[in-house]
Image (cartoon, rainbow, N blue to C red):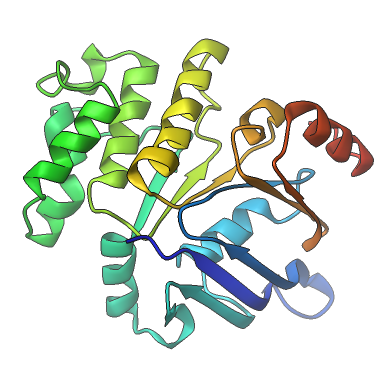
Length: 243
């Protein structure tokens, strides 16, 4: 069962001395299990850095990151790689599908790399929820952008990760297809019990979440529960966002 993630006094500094840039400054935040959390803020606020640190893609300069009960900072590179593969799902703006593989093989790729087999019942459930049953034999070039993103989402869900990170998942999609993908993320939380954390600049996208974490200058400046697009837009204007 997904168990969420959290940070405790997380800081991330790039460079040193006069060239040092503090991308995250003592950030303590929770991404609760079975909930959909959006991460927002002006350009350069630290959104992607926060996601990369919580997902184990970058190490922290100081502070701690937990996925479930596991602190990431004490893991060897090998164990961290295994944790990312088995317990974390990723959905990116670029679909990152392999063009020579069918949709089915793209979905099961993480397990193929790990030398394990998917839970067939779970695989069937994910494919059904994401409406991919008739597309499994198709290659990415034979799929629309929305269908490709659904395949990417299925790949993120099929390992039953503790948390799925989505980085601007609708950024390359038209508004109708983007709304469909957001509905699917919402459904993954409501119908499959998934935990989702999404970086976005779009107030409409953030309106699908249970809560929005607002960052500015590497710090959390607000957390909004039960967000609506209008409330999110007003808050972003208050942060001086121009995006």
